[in-house]
Image (cartoon, rainbow, N blue to C red; front, side):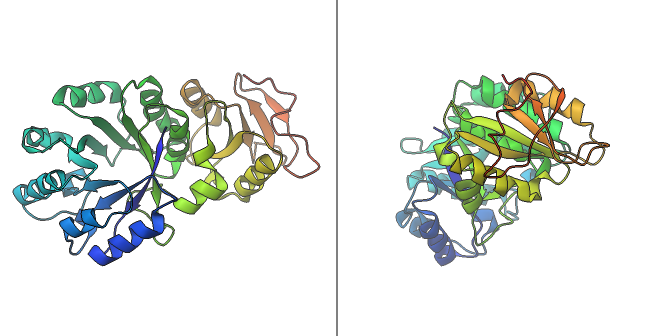
Length: 323
């Protein structure tokens, strides 16, 4: 099971407790980003938590906002473990601090982030973190184009232990949604509805994950169809298509495949499909054609597809082959 984790960047302890209460029952975990809080009372946060938590105090070198001393930051994480936080997130270059953490009630996520690009050696990086003693490995990169989702999805597909792999940014959206199909993907992060910007680029709101994508009913048989377009993330077709699929009783989801402005669709699909395993693709604005088209998951031939409507047949039932 892949958990739905809401990332909380509250101003203070009271606001964080309120945000956790709002998320309880809708999220499986809450990440408390202490580095983004003006002040926090860690014992109070953990004593009052209504759901399991990840305690994170991210330093600037890893994309966070902690500006205090490193010794003080590590002391906060040690305190979190001593108090029985469910998870503590520790950065890869501070792994030597693992020995000082009380792990009797706390699992340690060893994480590494790249805010400039998507590394192509995620498997090797993951192995380094496992060797360092991680309970969970977390590897994150910035997707500059749709094809950059492939390394993260490959890591999740090949994982045999709890793993978090994310392609950040709008072009990385598929990695956040397809994570729910992988049994060893520990979680995917959501932004709180009251703070839709979230704590990292590309986070999807909690409401959208529930209502638009119905992620908590995704199972190994769920089919995924990609909406392939530069503006896929904001297209009204996402809501229309997913509403149609749900109403028709299909165990399927329409997800955005946002192309970079200069990205070739065929090359993007060739990189993505071997690890995404999508049932098909809808190209919302194909070259020289004003009609949407659907592409099969097994090849990249174009075939006409009807618009979603109550009168239309299932978007899975097209002239294109499906795999």
